Length: 350
Ligand SMILES: [Zn+2]
Image (cartoon, rainbow, N blue to C red; front, side):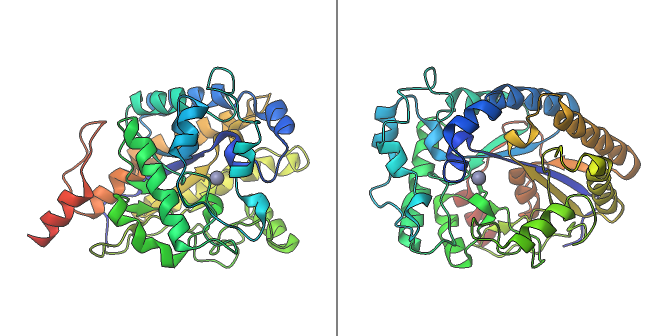
């Protein structure tokens, strides 16, 4: 589907400890990422000042005021993974989760969610309720559907309508896509069509795959992954594939650091010149570091976007706005622009 100008999309996977629980001890998380929440506020400030529209895909367990409410919000059907460590529910039952956000800022995120909602052109989206892994062995579509419904319910309680999804570890299960639209989810972040990325990420990934993905952060091994949009299909969610993961600064690979930025800027320029989408993503904790190198890199990316905006007319869009645009909605004018997919289906039928 041809576009008149390039589109710069940013999506952030907001998960606090829920997204790292199965791969990182909590003590490590608290030691290294305690400033994640402050980083999120800084990023929101950068986005507001830079006119950047972004989607924040947020784990549903973070939407609660108290543990009592969290326990009441969990789905009746829980995922049964072959690898039991993938499920967060034993962790939730273990007593490691505190009473509320004030006493446990690694599991609760309602104040952050509200802050995002209040910032112009930011949208809260879902990263599933429980950081659900759609391609891991054992779980099934009914368990995923129950998880998704719990996420929609938790957001609705806070007056937030979820309209897009980012699948944890980018595990897109094609059989589950038909379950999105009935819950009001009209867009998802897919993966680049390259063998390194197309099945997402898993703790079982080979060392070779991980090493090549790491090198791809610095050297253009797999391509820019910018793209033109596919025509929307009625009732099917819109795929807005990721182009590039904004990986954290690495002390071990400090010599390659200039290449990390160059790789992204070149991809953005390629998209702007060719009227394509460039979709950058990361977790807020990828932007945490004591010297502020990651935030500085983000600032340089945003400054480059400004250049591309004036040179080529590139636009900043969150996933919701871009899917609206694809579906033929009116141009985005208001920060809190919303449209129910149910209404839209009717319009397309008319
Ligand atoms: Zn995640």
